[in-house]
Length: 415
Ligand code: UDX
Image 1 (cartoon, rainbow, N blue to C red):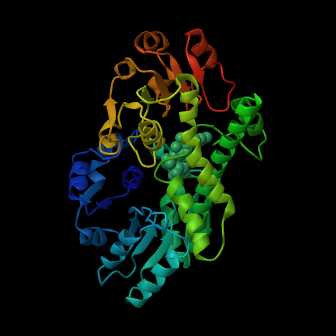
Image 2 (cartoon, rainbow, N blue to C red):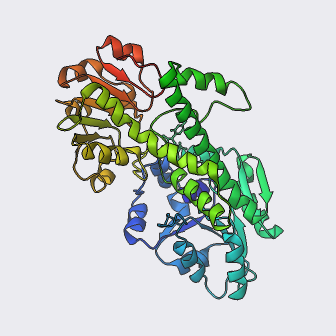
Image 3 (cartoon, rainbow, N blue to C red):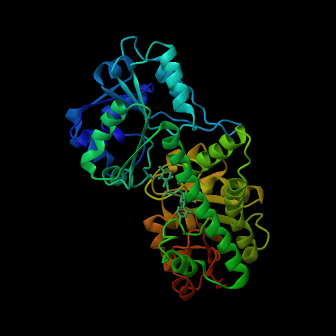
């Protein structure tokens, strides 16, 4: 993604990865992730992009090396930094003048550790810059091209200047800071957004008890510029490759340094429980779920991506299976990714076929095809017309007019 976007800005970019299959499909113009606009971007900039599994080729070709490796969570909640260290290990002896720009999300303090390590290995003349990434999946190309801000953390001027220069033409505010502050900005931003989501989800749960409508409450809150309208969509909770991992990592980071981050503990717990509330909503209308057929509409963690990491569908499917329900899953593009992750779930690429004979449907991911829910046809093929809208994207009046029992999150129940 980053490579294709820098190529679009006119730079020559060499992309290195240890995964040969990934490099081969990139060469063929087929990135493994589904990201709107990415295939076209690679195609348009073919002449400026080079792909390789040989790290030496990357280091030989580049002045600035962006480290974009995965930092997945470990059992302790700390991120696994082995891929980051592998990059450092791969640095050739003659690397003076090279700048390493860290895009991967790494715990606050990692940059300083890398600096010490570089110095001790005779790489004092290799620059180090923290340049966290704020791209959201599904809008990553647009987010890169029109960022809200670019954060550049460095302890020396020159490497920071070199990285900043790459972004200047985008016209976004560039915040220059030290390395730990840049690292913390990334964690604090994601943790704050996750907190906003858990907050509105708790408000939604109280709305359900009191008869208020959370979507209107969110609109009313969002009109206050100090609060802002974004990330106040109540639903099944947050998933994806960033929020769950980064919130856990920040909590862990705080804990490792002796501070108990109470707020984040609650944010995580609310998010976990939020997905499970669907089960009670289904049982309210279907009774015991044993033997009932429930169709999950959408499996990816959000629309416009095939990413299944920490998707709500995973927890929900497992809960429903544990209740003895037959679980079906529909998704327009994430089926291949879903296959190994959802044992016991029947997968469909046709929404109406997935609904045939179902006792209930649950909106898990707000795909366009779900937003345009075909009430009439669905009502004809489902055994019972029960719809639980886990993303509040359907119109309750329309659902009621089509004789559906309709439940959503934090909006008055129209059963
Ligand atoms: C996020 C950040 O937005 C991005 O800046 C960062 O670089 C990576 O993490 P992403 O995970 O791609 O991006 O998706 P995002 O659109 O932020 O949604 C994350 C999750 O929160 C999704 O599961 C989404 O459904 C959920 N969400 C989002 C809500 O439940 N309510 C909201 O109001 C917004």
